[in-house]
Length: 282
Image (cartoon, rainbow, N blue to C red; front, side):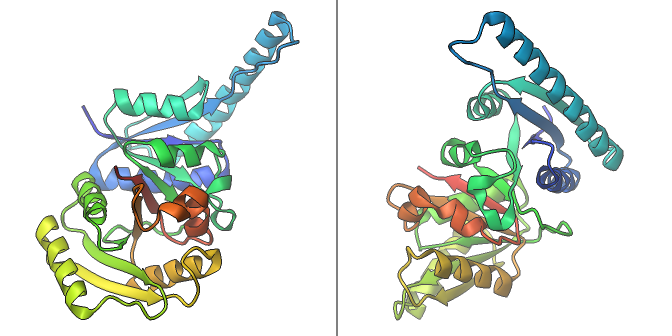
């Protein structure tokens, strides 16, 4: 079975940018594309069944018309990519998780609104739930993303094994030839010593079987739970190391746990300039 990218869409321009990114990724690795639109079931206690049926018919027709326009645009832009499109009624989170379980999906690729953060992503607030629960993570693409490139990946690290896990998983799904940059955010005057940095780099290189690993950190002045410094620090790290994709993982015991449970997607996605792979690692 050919591997596929699942691209949920609401037919917006943000979703179109994500579809374009997914198409370039699919071309690079010879994957197929599955474009999905999920619309909500109409439910109101006082409404008659006849009225509910009429609303449902309208929603189905509107979704199928919009999908036809979106999918025709996609096929015209990428005629050589094996692709399908579907509209489904129900809950986005449940449907996507079911499709992941039943199909060979490499990544869920979704659009964001950039400065608005992932909480207001193009396809709705359920994206946050997908990031929290998807067993394969979510690859979020900023609305202002430009020319496709995938040569170097960066991972926000706190010298924990789950950082290696997400690197290993991403590389296993893509290519072992990708360069890796370890990105660390320091609290004021708490920079790791050179011996710890060297040890961690060597451990990562050994685990990945790669010598293409660099390390870069950024010192924050304020607490790590202050949104603006976190955003600025991540932006600087991404720009300084010129990474093409940022990897962010978390566990219940991780460095990013509190940030994620409160607003990590919004914080990191704010003014994001590169696609970011969010993955919960248990």
